[in-house]
Length: 187
Image 1: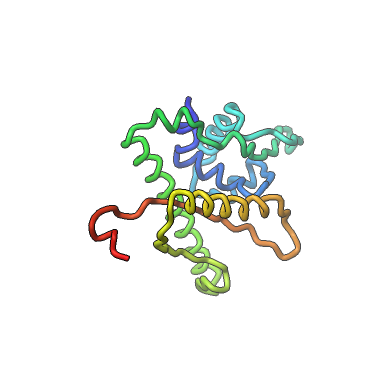
Image 2: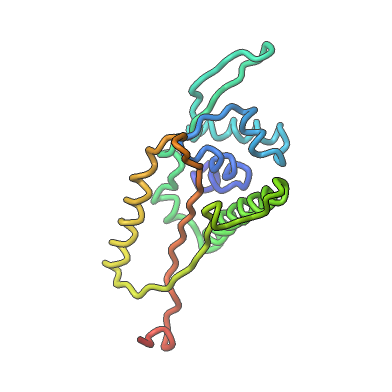
């Protein structure tokens, strides 16, 4: 199975996302985070990801006679190869982007629902939630520089550990070219 098919299955994508932030989770902890995914389905997809080297077993202990494994995400294994990207058709890219956006929407729905359950309501400012889109006029070189700066800013924080009042946050980035044409040339 190529990396695109492996990672862009909706359930496997959610499993991978649950591990983001250098987390170690048992399957029981993962089930608690993904309560809407049937246990058998979750175990099957964890097995697929572990078999593909995306999840690594980092611990094992006996619980009521059964082995309970702890897993960690192998971040390098979550990258889609240049070869797989080059082989993708326009429809493959649409499917991949749709899966990504659907996962993002589901994350936002769970956030909004969590606010309703807790009785505190949703407070984007308090919770540090935001979604914005800006238009920038950049040369290819300026865009490459901006993308490198964003990558460096995120990379500098990937080593942060839990604690010290830190909260796990999901940061999603999408870059798209703006519309080209006569109306786009106005300055």
